[in-house]
Image 1 (cartoon, rainbow, N blue to C red):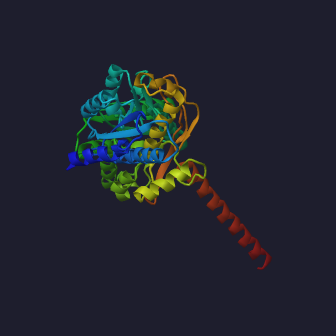
Image 2: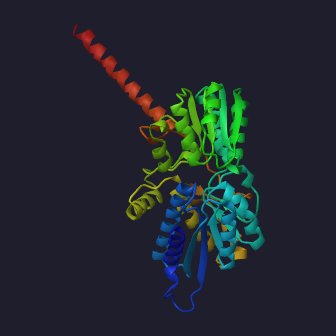
Image 3: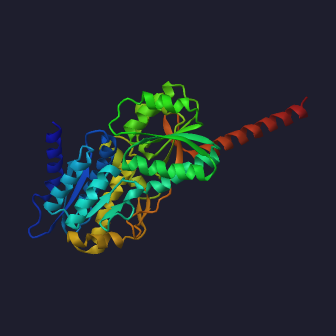
Amino acid sequence: MKDLSRVLLTLVLGLGILGCPAGEKTVLIGAVVPLSGPVEAYGTAVNNGIALAYERAKSGPDLGFVLQLETVDSQGDPATAAKLLKDLYSKGAITVIGGVTSDEAMEMVGVADAADRTLVSPTASSPELTGVSRNFYRIFPSDFEEGTKMGSFAANTLGLKTAVILAAESPYGRGIQGVFKNEFTRHGSEIVEVIEYPQGTNDFSGLIERAVTLEPEAVYLAAYWDDVVAMVKGLHQAGYKGKTLTTAAFATSQAVESAGPAAENVYFTQTVFDLSNPNEPIPSFVEAYRAKYGLDPDLYAAHGYDAMNIVLEALKKNDSTQGSDFWKGMRSIRSYQGTTGSLQFDEKGDVQKYPRVYVIKDAAPVNYDKFVNEARRVLQESLKALEQKQKQLRANP
């Protein structure tokens, strides 16, 4: 059934090629995303964003060529992702959106280099990917930014002195936990222990027991969403009273919903994506997404949407439909306003975005700074009301 769904998805997205004006050039863009498997939550959201941007481009002003999108399911497996990428390049894809996870992206870069074609990742974030290839670009910030932000926040803002790290043995887990550790200890705090576990681990009870026994003031979780959910639940069930800290891997509605009550007061980092932002292109994106899917877009859907639009912008900038030249269009992008911020690539293929800390309150993520400011405002208003009442009592004893 999943294979049939993938075929149907490819056919539906490619229907636009039928009935094309004679002689008009067709430009094929590929997308390799995990639509099934352990990281399906990320892939589904990213794919929703890609598909929406594709549909809006098809129904918009004439592009000067016929746009075709072919989407395939990596199942979250790096080797499968690399094979599918090679197939798409062989079919003539001018560029491919893919590498939703860092593990996939690491495997796919070599294929992009061998074909001399670009790979545009919507969400891979491992520091190991910075400058890895001239052909690799990503619109999600490096984990260096995320890990640094949380390490500083934990030590300085929360005043934590000790932490234990629970991290997956993967490019993503290794990358972000190492940055967090360096920043946390740089401010004089201590990592009591780093507990790494192999990918595919299903039982976290022993790891949780070890972490809780060490009695740290915080536990930092560096893994993909399903593992983070399992560990958040495990810490909650173990009665852990310290702070639980994690990454943008937790920034999906599916993760928060799956964690249930255990998600409350979990801190995580992510780049800013504000559904209520009145500035375009956010309102039109949110409205179109709700109309198509019946739900609010999350951070990953927004990055999928921006990835497709960045590819289209690069096509316009380069004025060429040759795959070997596509990188020139990517390099020429300057301050493109996406739903996830202003986008342009540095010499290493990275974007400059600065994550913020969020905390789960009443089953919803809240910007920590806004949360604190709002709490301060409410307190000030309460104190002001109390002072007014005391004045009235003194005036009318």
